Image (cartoon, rainbow, N blue to C red):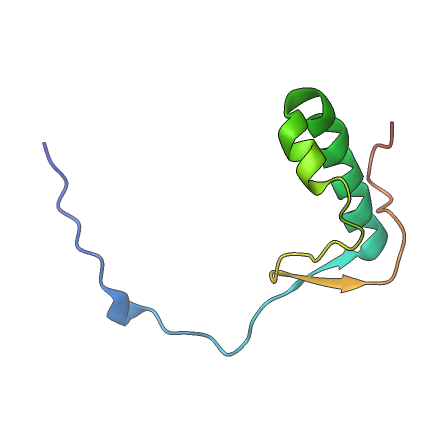
Length: 76
């Protein structure tokens, strides 16, 4: 049995209220260091390519704010 589905884009409208999730700068930096640690053992080419990046720009979905690593983060 084949389900017939037809996407109707007229049922959606672009919102002027763009939701941005808050994230602290130190959390972004922590996540980047965590990624580097993984890449160093899993993909050395990628590691070498990005290890010299010194400023991380968060995805537009996020709004960066000054602050520390989040309290819920498990730091090893």
